[in-house]
Picture (cartoon, rainbow, N blue to C red):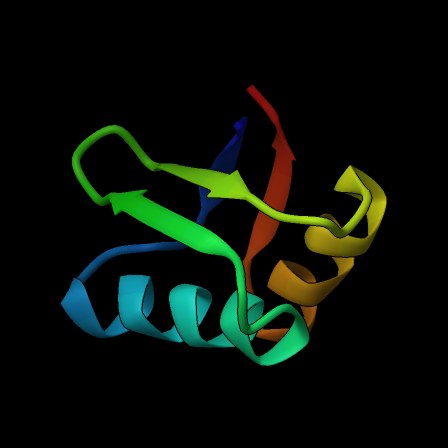
Length: 65
């Protein structure tokens, strides 16, 4: 499980957008967004850099927690 700090998530729509972006890149991923903490926990076969890129393409800035 990898945890990312994600900047720009301000509502439920934001968390859903991040979750859908990750699942679009790896449909087998397990994604948990925590809006209050500004974090996303991901269990995925993708490398961290690829996940950061996917989150970035969704319009958010991610960094390892």
